[in-house]
Length: 411
Ligand SMILES: Cc1cc2nc3c(=O)[nH]c(=O)nc-3n(C[C@H](O)[C@H](O)[C@H](O)COP(=O)(O)OP(=O)(O)OC[C@H]3O[C@@H](n4cnc5c(N)ncnc54)[C@H](O)[C@@H]3O)c2cc1C
Image (cartoon, rainbow, N blue to C red; front, side, top):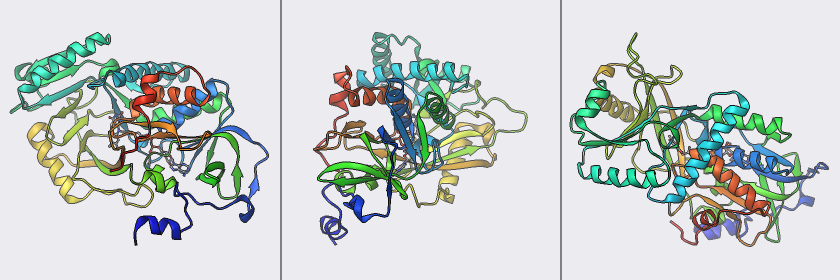
């Protein structure tokens, strides 16, 4: 059956959302009308809610499974912050976000950011020229910790890495251009601070109730919550919430993450003795052993699709073997070490790799914030701030508005 036909038959409108009216449902309309409801407490939602609250709005934050849950893209152990981007707007956002992550650390007294450094290795010597160009670009933005390293220098600093075949590397020694977040802890800390500031957090799945093209409320099963503005920051679930509009514009892909055991009594692979690392073109990157979880190795798998609600989060033997083979070669001391933990996560790509922070078409009161496109975690604070300013009609950075527009193009 054609998709359009299916949506018609299943009673879904242009936005692909249930058109159920309030009167048809056995629901109690809440009397505690809030000003803004944010659906989804990943990095985009939790930071949007936090900023809205800070700016004086009355905010309810809903999450179906809870902030930083195992199904959410923001629920992993660690995420990187770096500023390695052709587009200066993303560098500005990384800098602002880093500052806001550090602020939340200070306010909460919790450590979220670790100065791991970032080592981007490549076997292609042509990348040395690109790294030197990037170094200059970052310096123009006030980031002065970029080094371009030779193979000998890599071998000297990190003898636990087999640098065979590596021609060059770009290294950033911390700050906004090379630090690691304790991701899940970060999200849960922001959610806690939001609640401390008077924000309301509710564990509930929220479905928009649409009438005449406008979101009229959020159906949470036993009641409908109403407010002046609605924000949908549902990560990989966005295309389930608005299938008519967003299924053609978002792609959800699976990512596998394996934690390799470190040898007994050996701290060479433990923070701060080795940085976050990647090998260009290998399909592998990873993080040091942090909080004793093991040496993290992340794999870009073949293209795939993923259902964030129902798919099993188990690693297959092929990926385990690939990881062992890679680790044995690049980190020889980890040869024969077992996989001690694993995670499966999903990324949500927009058609152009940019985030989406925009109004739902033809709607004045409803916003979409998401499409992290594999690099969204770090930017949550600045994007949440931007979204909050747009919603409350405060002065905004217009560069963000244009870059994060909901584009016409479909996949
Ligand atoms: C393996 C991996 C590594 C990554 N590495 C990095 C990195 O190093 N640096 C970086 O910056 N980014 C990285 N990313 C990308 C980054 O994690 C994501 O871009 C970001 O976390 C997306 O955040 P989000 O808020 O859009 O979505 P999520 O974090 O998925 O949050 C969405 C939330 O919405 C809730 N929800 C959904 N639907 C509903 C509903 N109807 N009602 C109520 N709640 C709902 C979910 O429960 C979830 O908690 C990585 C991603 C993966 C998977």
